[in-house]
Length: 95
Image 1 (spheres, one colour):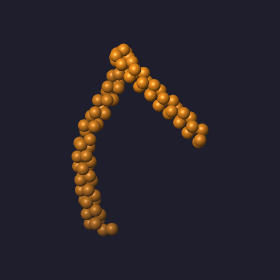
Image 2: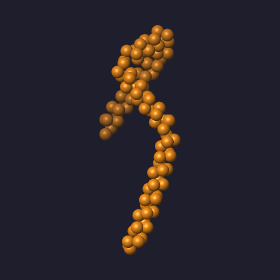
Image 3: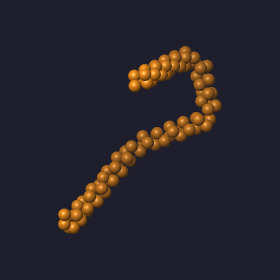
Image 4: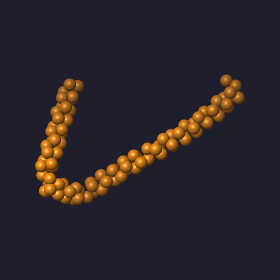
């Protein structure tokens, strides 16, 4: 391939790369609110791990105010957990 063709191809590739970078940047800007929400959720989780007393207090308040709702949710969560554990054991046995 002659040097002139290589140079022309290189210029086209550089222009295409620049256009793709601009497009990716625009698409990422549209995702920024969702990514920011994810960051806030991670920060909240970190804060709760460092301050578990608040989580325990909130749970205690819920148990006092809505004991049936908490018991129903706990029962469903336990059932889902047991189903998951059984499924994992079954999958491990079939391998």
